Image 1 (cartoon, rainbow, N blue to C red):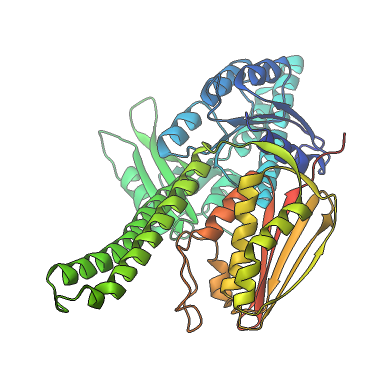
Image 2: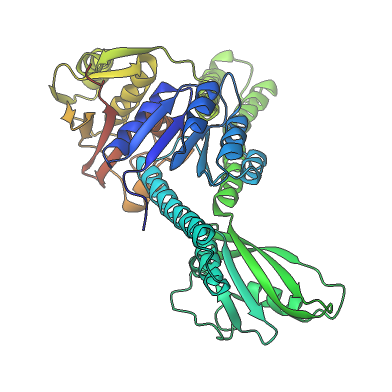
Length: 493
């Protein structure tokens, strides 16, 4: 169950992000209001209670944490999602402690956003149901027998999993999130032994708590349910002590920390990949310089000309890679300065095709295009030039001699759709899955002579996501690829 026709407030200083979320959610019959800064966000957020709040972490006037704090003071049960291009474990912990429902790094896919909204509105339904039960009890002075039902409704509304276990290792109480977080696919009855239900690490934790004779203490532990970090929980198991100081059971609270672990793993992987990709060309340049320094080929400078050229190529590749890394960093940090204007996509594509005409002639490529006029989008021209340049450049670099390129642009619902199709190398299915990863480049007999940083398509996807757009890839090995991007059309006045 979930709240239908819910009311949502988006607080973000980036217009593209506000309007992108509004566009995506409005088609789902959700009412979306927006605020362009923290001050306006607080004013709107406390003037009425929304079913869901999206709050940007970094805004020019007031930090998102302060907006979250002010809204929570007025509406303690408010469901608030923190959006940030400054993702870190520290800010994730801070906002969670302030009562944030979810912490989402930018950019994110539209499908991920829709799934998040569905989960949040489902939680909102439980919150409202629990509130209604509470209000009914206050009005009607319900008997204590009905209290258990109310408590169960509240506990079932929690995203955290809860299980109560007695001294015999039997389930006394659990909520639905407990089953979900442990990926338990069967119905668990009260009184059922837990030893065949819980994963080994949690079983060991439960046994350790139950075996305590005195100096009772809680145990907190990370447990991987679906490796490597698809589902990771933090299990906090605490003994239940009666009035005589004896242990009578325990309660274990499970929290999903998968996103935090994924973020941590991604940061480590990125550092390792960056170090590897920088080390190889530097080592090559060092080798060439040492060879020249030692006059290994004789005294004639002409004998070293090819090594100088190779060194220049390697250093240029390093500079390109560093520039791409800086672009990714700026996109993630939200530090990209944009000059938004209305642009006709057909005109922009034509300009880029003129730039690449000589490159196409060198490979004797045939170009066909079908560009619909008046495809108006609100964008930063330089950013989308970079996107279009990358797609056309790849269609040329990875194409075959005497090949074919077809470029189209048309209206597709609320989007301007651009497709670039080539008759080139294409991709294996496993390569397609990793296409937008940092530093990934397909490696086969056709790509040995093709240079690149492996960051171009990563940047393309980040840019498109930042405009609430999307990118699709259709490819068949040795037959060619089609890249399609979707950018929101300018809203008609």
